[in-house]
Image 1 (spheres, one colour):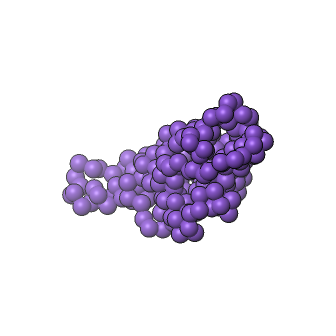
Image 2: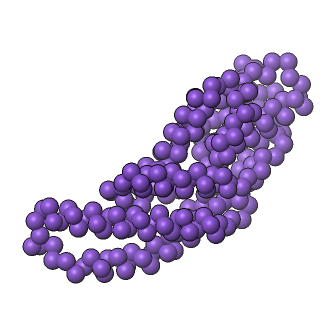
Image 3: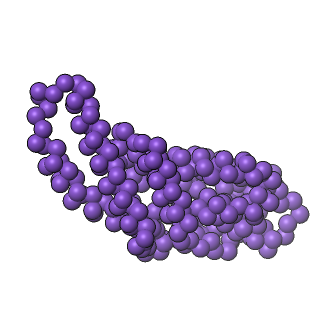
Length: 222
C-alpha cells in the first residue's frame, strides 16, 4: 500500500521569481513547497493560489480528485470488490481527516546554485495503517471461519455471488470501522527527513512530481 499515487500530485506548480535576491529566492522556495503541502493535506490553499493564480474551483477539484484517487486505492489495496456509495463517502471522510492530522515541518530552503534550491521537510508519519493492519490480520481468520461453513459446490451462481458480496461487505465495514477507531487514537512514527530539489528554469521555480510523491510516501506510514 506504500505505492499510493495521487492524481493531485501529478502536476508542476510554477511561478516567476524574476528579480528576486538570494534571500528572497530561499523564502520563495520554502513558501512554494509549504503551499503545495498545505493545499494537498490541509486543504488550505490561499498561499498556493497566490503562486499559481488558480481559481477556487480548480483547486477544489484538484483536492477532491486526490481524495477520490486515495479512495479507489483504498478499495483496491484492501481487496474490497463491492463497495457501496456509503463506503465511498466513509473512506473519503477518513482520508480528509487523516490529511488534516498530517504532521510535517518545511525547513528554510538552502541555495545550491543559481538554478537550484534544496528544501528539507521533517515528517512524522501517521500510524493509522499500522493500527488497522494489526487488527485486520486477526479479524480475517474470524471472518474466514465464519464463511467456511457454506458448501459452495452446491450453490447456484446467484447464491454464490450473494455470499461473496456479503463476505466482501462485512470485510469492508470492518476495515472502515477500524480506520475510524484508529483516527480517534492517532499516533505518529519517528521523524523522517526528506530533502527535495527546487529547480529554477527560465526564472521559474519547478518542483518535480517525483519529489512530491516521495514526500507523500511518508505522510502515512505503511
